[in-house]
Length: 295
Ligand code: ATR
Image (cartoon, rainbow, N blue to C red):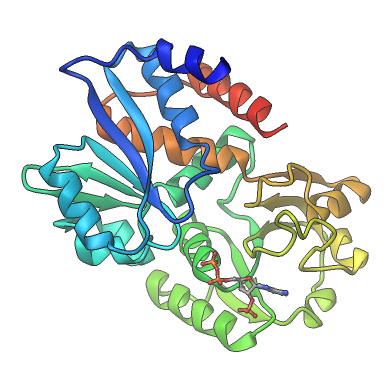
């Protein structure tokens, strides 16, 4: 009954634009909620649906083009693949090496990364500054690398990349320093992180440690670490209060999860597809709906 009522709310006709998310799996995606709610508010005649793509990502993109799909989000495991499959790639996205959004151009699609601009907009909305800050990034995978580049572009004073595998952290630090032509970034092991001086670091958690169902773990389990930071920003949003965040809060530090990053990556994609500007007021409304959907 609930599902039927939902379907009745979308008034599909001959002019309805179709958008969606491609990935594997897609059944738990929150993106339809974000985009269909935005469409309702703007009165746009569009519908956003999940598409499970088991493996043929190239065929899926070609097919989407042939079908006149208006735009797509792309999720795991295809975020890297789409750069070679799209007709064009936005320059920041090429630098990051992964995209999550395909925007229709004259022939085919152009690939964008809205995850990283989304994180930046989320942090701004939470009042978390990057410029002039000393930042610790935890992790050295694809997400951490993109965060490190973003933080460098936003002119952090110092970037410390902390990872279990040191070599990966060192490679990212080198790449960031080459990119900004400065010695702003350095690698650090989990053991040495406790030797850092000061208590004014902004820590961004960019590993998958602590993600549901692994909710009792934090990449850094030593509570002394949390004396060194003023804010813990976790890119995980499930659970909504990760162990990493709880440990920061226990020390009286500010903590944020990744739900706003999820919100703003969607908002920026919607803006690219529909040439609109989404106000903070609308963003907050959608954020409220997203929060309820996570409960
Ligand atoms: P993504 O592209 O989502 O960032 P990834 O490239 O697989 O995913 O990176 C995962 C990150 O989580 C890495 O920093 C990884 O550390 P290693 O480089 O040492 O593998 C980190 N990670 C994953 N599981 C971990 C664990 N059990 N303990 C500590 N770090 C972990």
